[in-house]
Image (cartoon, rainbow, N blue to C red; front, top):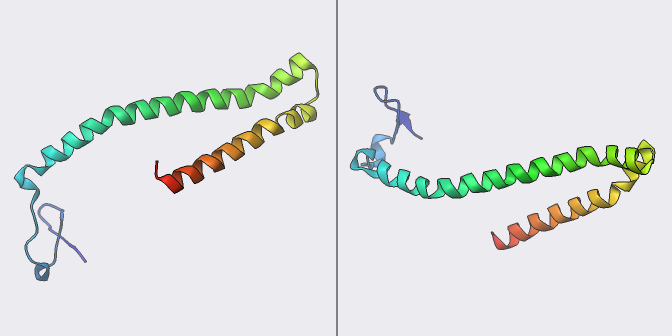
Length: 105
């Protein structure tokens, strides 16, 4: 259980826990350096995910319209024609999730 220090509003350990390390020893600077190295990686990963998600959403939203206008099928047939793509998306999502869970990467 922690108590709040009323002057700084930071959590402090109860007195029976003994001395606690303070952040005034310059450790904030080291934490920021670690995050600075990860910012580029996170930025590129977020950018990649945004581009991929936009493309996937665009394809999923536009493909039924394309099938109806170009190939001349009705709305029900266009939906049925999308079943293989949705099945592949489902299988690949589940498979990649299991792979990440097993390997941790």
